[in-house]
Length: 259
Image 1: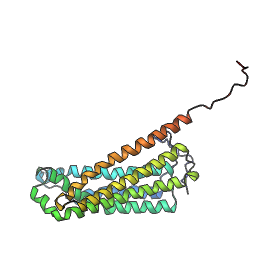
Image 2: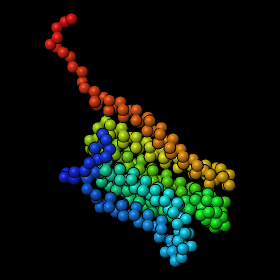
Image 3: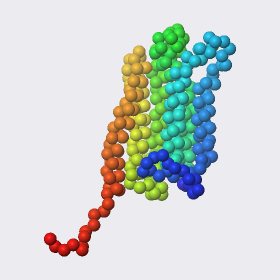
Image 4: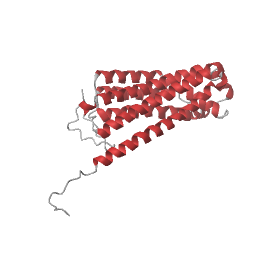
């Protein structure tokens, strides 16, 4: 079923894409609450500082917390955008939504652990003592950590890809025009592309020598390549559709005589 939009008065910030999402449903409210709880889990293990030295120790974890917070809000925004665009509340969408928040909650601690380790190691002892970083993980465990992280990362974007695939399949019921259908296909391709990067990073972590397994994370920069490539391909198609939509139909002047 589609969410009712009568009387909402919602103005969509996306040009040329009509938002069909109306009032916030119980499912959306529940999802927002889960994301808020996930952010809370990022700091719940920290004790209230009792001394200035303790406070500075907590402040040194700000960078890792900021990265984790940014990633969670990025996922939340993708969910928000999908909900606003389509307003779908089918059992299939509800099931994928519940699976998404399950994955988000499950991977909060691996996410925090990974970026605490990365920032601590990259700081050269300024944020975290080298001994503390070395105690967090053994070199032989780097590949396993990357596979765990990539599994959660890939799962999130596969779920979004399936959500957009479903929206594309019910485009008739949603009354999507040609431009909206194209943008839906673009989002589907982009999310599956991001998921593929996660699979590639996991494979690299397993196949690389143990001491280089952690370096496989550098391949996540391929997301920029995927986003740029997909954006250009579908962007050109979108420009053609918009140009055709704004081109007035040609008419023949039957009143003019022969020249």
